[in-house]
Image 1 (cartoon, one colour):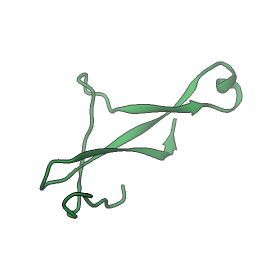
Image 2 (cartoon, one colour):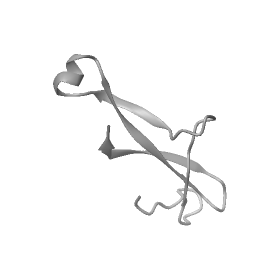
Image 3 (cartoon, rainbow, N blue to C red):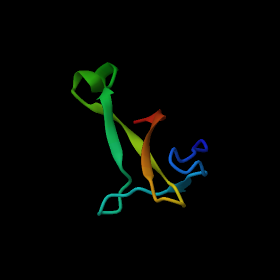
Length: 69
């Protein structure tokens, strides 16, 4: 993950794991797949990566658009 800076404090944000209450990593739907799976209605998902500011506690989530399932 690239280095991100807090828009409020200007300090480097720290990577933080984001999980559901069941312990699974969070994902979002990024749209329809191509090919046979797309024709069957299977969507494409991608992982979410979290960062947290160690100063103010701001948390941001970013979609990993390079790693689509």
